[in-house]
Length: 309
Image (cartoon, rainbow, N blue to C red; front, top):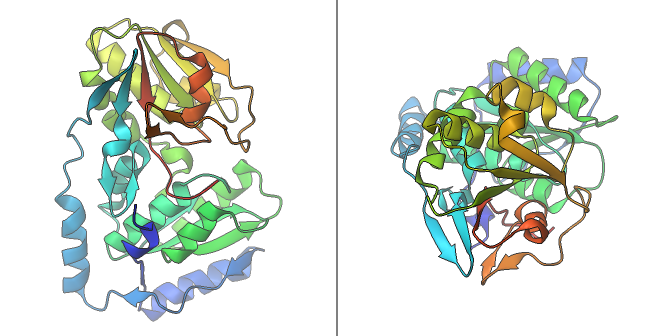
């Protein structure tokens, strides 16, 4: 597969006012900034920016991704939604939020999460600049990809999720940029994921899904509730406790709809087995569901990163 960095490049902002907004933000917050690549292209006219945005508008976000039968399992291939080299339900949600942006995109991302690269790729596709707030530390492949795609990286110490989320929100508000929420936590993500539940196979005995932020799981449960379908769901928790977000975004009776099981591997640990019937799975997320699969299960494949973990 082609390197995602060759498929999409981010544009820089060419107006003094926007640069000034970023400068004011830097002066107010303590952080370390990774310099921007010198090769970033500029969206130098309103016409060019409009054309770039129209490419995003042409994508049908409501189209259902396929379901495949693989040996004794089903796979919900949400990873087949792809735009400018990034894929999956997170890319769909990001594009939905970014369509209305007019200046730039700001997000918070865990160091090993593909979110920063997703935001950077879609920003470039739409002719926007991007900024990723994350925890301080050595550059990970995921953050390196985001930088290659043109994102400005801002590191914070301490790098707790609550810290980087707050810093990203503050930066977006100050610069007038569009915030892409951590974990894509928003009503658009819930709505779009809920629709994808519409073609889950009637023969499936259970849905199995990796749980990071909990947003994808909340969307699946919302879709099932809307269809009044009591299909059992197993959520394999690979990160922090998702119950707070599920209480906010999932149906009120979500605890009766899903069983949560924690992966024996911590978030940053890579699953050695990351393939099912020749189909590669994300080693941080979906691959950690494999030990829990039973015959007749439908594994929800949220997405797949294009970097080595």
